[in-house]
Structures are given as C-alpha cells and as structure tokens.
Length: 395
Image (cartoon, rainbow, N blue to C red):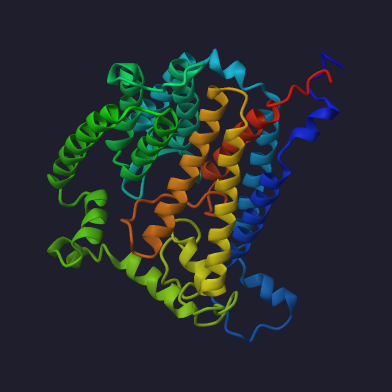
C-alpha cells in the first residue's frame, strides 16, 4: 500500500464542502452564460427545438469542457505532495518571468492588453498561471522567515529578496498594460505578509514605496490619452472628462448598472424577451460583466446568493489555512484565498460602479478557459495542503 500513488484513505481527507461549493458556482455560471450568449427570444418560440436553436450551445459546452479539464488537473494536483513544490520554487519563478516576457513580445492584443497567446480562435493568458506559480514562490520565501518563529517578519531586510522577485512579474504585467492583474499579485503578497505578522515599520515602508510607484505609473499612462487602460481609469475617476465623453468609455458600467437595476428583487428570469442582456446592451456579458447579467435575470436575490457562495468558498478556504501542517502550506492556501477575494470584490465592484473596470473575471463563473482551469488548479493546491494535515499515505 505504501508505494501506491492513489490510496483509498486519501478520500477521507478531501474537503468535500469546498468541492461542492465549486460545483454549485459552475452550475450557476452555465445558466448565466447560456442567458448572456443566447440569441434574443421573442416569446413566440414553440417546442424544445426552437428554444435550443436560440441558445449558443458552443459557449456552454466550451465552459463545461474547461471545467472538466480543470477538474482533472485539480485531481492530479491533489495527488502531489505540496512539499515537493518547495524544492522547485526557483524553477517556478524563472518560468513565470519567461512566460511574461514571451507574451509581452510574442502575445496578441485583446481588449487593449498584450497578454494572450492565441491558439486558433482561443486564447491562453499566461498571467493566470503565473499567479499560481507566484503564490507558491511567495509562500516558500515567507515561510523560510517565519517557520518555527513566533515573531514573524520584523525588518524590511527580511522581505527584500521576496520584494524584488515580486517586482519583476508585476512590472512585466503592468506594461502590457494590465493594472487589474498586477494589483492581484500585490494584494496576494499583502495578505500573505499580513498573515506572516509583518512589523508596522515594514508596512510603512511598503506603503510609501507603493504610493510612489503607483503615482509614477499613473503619470506613465497619462502620457498616452488614447491608451485603453487610461480611458478605463478616467471613466471611473472623471466620467465627465472630454476623453470619456468622446469615446463613451464609461458606457460599459452605465449599461451594466441599467441591466441590474431593471432586474428588481427577483429578476426578469432567463431568456426574457426585451431584457437588456438579450438585446446585447451588456458588453462582455458572459465574462467581465456576467454579474450584471445574472442580477438582471435572477434579481437582487440571485446576486445575493452568488455573493453568499463566494463567502462560503473564501471563508472555508481561510479556515483550512488554520489547520495546515506548516507555514508553507498555510501561505499557499492564504494566497489562493486572497487571489479569489480580489477577483470577486473587483469584478462585482466594477459591475456596480464602485471600482474601475479592469477586466478581472469572476472565479468559476465568468466564461473563459484560462481562468476556469487555473482556478481549478489553485484549489487543487488548497486541497492538497489540507489533505496532508494528516498522513493518509500508507495508512
């Protein structure tokens, strides 16, 4: 029994609650994607054949296929002892840098960002994979400083090696330009550093550096008023500006909010003739603005249910970090929870107009292969760490 990769005892240590929440999220997302991508219904459809003819089955099947691939990879990652990854962090880091350099020079531009490798009509976004690789790298470097210590990170010098390793991927993503994804990396690091009990002096230095860098980046973007990312920021901070008014850069948020407002408490229902999402008024309704489409169809109640599902997903993930065997495992779980939290808050925030539009997808919900598969891998890592709080091998 000891030499077997798959041991029947391992199933006792899988956190099925987390798995079930993921399945519910994906099932819910397939309904929303079907609603967002369907041809407009008239209400005169008769029979199942006419109903199905209006659906974009390819979008639904692709999303289901991506989830199937993601599940298979989640299972494979669960089988790998996460401690093995601790010995590969240098390789994982330089693979991250190589991918981001390659996509900058060889990638295709999508929605104003050069961050995609195109495979036929489908795109792969290496920045999604690199998030996971960087979580592992950061977890290892921080655990080297805190494992067996009660004091945590006490000096800025303790995080300098971690900081420069973080800075390179963040800069490579920022110049694509992709503010949203670069902020995800920074948020992951900040949450992990908080859990590492960093001293307040360390935080003060980091905040000063962050403000200086962010100010410089805004100046860099402002030098090119036609830049897609700059127009998105202006649409949020100064919607009355000449650039925004002449390009309708705020139209995405306005139409998304109109759709959500029209949904009321219980929503208009799926495939309702005359709904804004059916008429194509909600831009990117199956990915960036899928929350707006969901709220229009299922109402405030449907949006609240979705938020509760994410609360359960993230809350449960954080709970699992508390019972991890070591700091390395705990930081991996915390990194995945932080990544998920940022995506949820930013995506829903931009849908309701509280945050700028950044193109950040909803985990397990927005249409897209890169996001779905990488989220499955990330939570495969979480399950791998949690399973090994006990040694099921050979039992």
